[in-house]
Structures are given as structure tokens and as C-alpha cells.
Length: 347
Image (cartoon, rainbow, N blue to C red):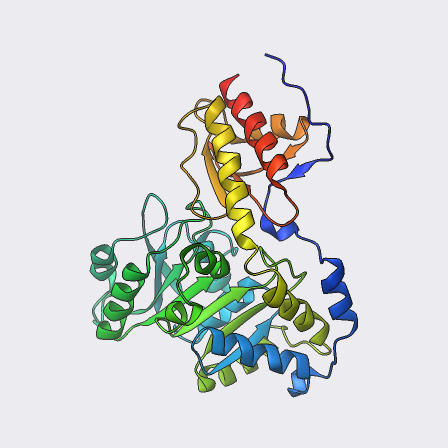
């Protein structure tokens, strides 16, 4: 069966990092009051750090250029060289940060497996190593909400509370990779602070669904953030007139947070159109990410075939493809893309 390519420009579903600043965001960036953030003198950065820390129920925040650096700093604050971090086997920290936690932080990681990125509390408890002279000491656990490679799945707040209590009782730290925590908040209505207070360190990202061009934020207690500020400079992450970037993030929080619900609806429309052509290839999305089982076809072949038809998706496994909606994608584009991918799989 021949499948006709789309008439529109390419529909890019590779990631929600493809977002571009809106006209209103560009205006806010141009008007930003700036200073030197390495000296702690950028008013826009300082205001954003205070705002996000309060939103997440913590004392202080630290702006970072990337989410990977935010995760590096959050884990660094909890895990010393030679100690270990526990996380899901498909967590971004262990799968998509190029071994940075081993190379730069000098730590090891040990993982559990789960079908959708939501681990079992009992399994996590069984992995926490006792302090002996023969085993690597478990210093922290990391969770991811929403879970990227799990398909944008939301960690239930009850599960997070269980793991938080487990870690507190065991004397180990708890880090949250909350790059897409905004999506979980919008989808569930759970206040951001209810999520944030359960963790020692939290990293959130502004350059995914929120649509800012650059930037993430690490929040924690004031002493931890003071130490992380020094380590950020050591890693080359000190920024000067970064208020331009803070203005973009602030604009996104003011104007583009609640609209994430549109991305979730568009992901559902994509999945419905896909299912009409190829039932069972993907589960109903919880947020803005759809993970697709390519069946007998390789993910590389599906990605290539989709690109020829004007749809960009990502291979995230030998037979697994990911599609992500964002503010650049409307409902009709999502429907068309889902239909095309479904026809490729069925063909």
C-alpha cells in the first residue's frame, strides 16, 4: 500500500525540545533586566530562582544551562565518589547523560527494571545496600517524573510518598529528575510543592514543553544550593547576563504552563489515530509522550519511512519509537502523524 506524504511542512515529533520562543517570549527576553549571575547580581535570575524554589517547596534554587547539569549537581550533592545511586534502568540519568555521573561525579549506578518507569517500592528497598566493607554504599535514589522512556508516565504521588519515607528511614538521599514535572502537575492537579517536598534535590526544565530556549533549575535547601553553585562554576556552568534566559523561563511559567494540557490532548489524538490503523502498537499516553512498539519492523526502518512522508519521530530502542507533542504541533498534525505511523506499521 502506497502512503501519500503530508502536504504540510514536516511534522516534528522527535522531542518537546524543538520548541521555539514565541513572539511574547522574545519580547520579554529583550526587555530583561540583567546583571552578572556568577556574582549573584542578575535580578531576573535571582527572582526566578526564588520563584521556582517556592513553587517546589524548597529554600533555594540554582539556574543551570541544561537539565543534565541540573541532574549532575543534584546527584553530586547527595552521592560522594565511590558511592552508588539507584535508579530505573531506563532513567534519563543512566541512559541519556553519556555516563556523566560516573565520569564527572565518580559514582556508580545500580538499576531496577519496570515496564513503564514506575518502580515498585519493595524492589527499591531490596536494592539499598547495607553499610559493610564489601558492598558499595547506597547514598541516594533517583526517580523521574514524568518518565521519558517509559512513555511520559506519571509517578503516582502515593508511590513517591512511599519512596520518600523509605529513603528517609534508610538514611539515603532522594533526587527527582523533574524535567517534565510540569506535565505531571498539569495532568494530575497535584501541587508542585507536594511533589517537590518529598525530595532532597529536584531538577526541573524550562526548555521542553514550557518552550523556553535554554535552562533548568535545581532546588534544595540553602546550604546544598550554595555548594552546588560552586560546583556549577567548576563544571563550566557559570553564566553572566543570564537574565535574558530567566525572562524566557518566567514568561513560560506565566503563559505556557497550563497549555501543556493541549499537548496531552494532542498526544492522545496521535495515539487514537495510530490505534485506528494498528491496534495495540501503543498504550494511551498519560501526558505528551507516546512510545510505539514497531512489532516486526525495526525502529530505524519506521523512522526512515516516516521521514520520507514528512513526519519525524525518534528511535528509542531496536523496535521502539517515540513521538512527543509540544506547542509546535496542533491537533490536526498530531492526528495525521498518528495515522501515517499506523499505516507504516500495518503495511
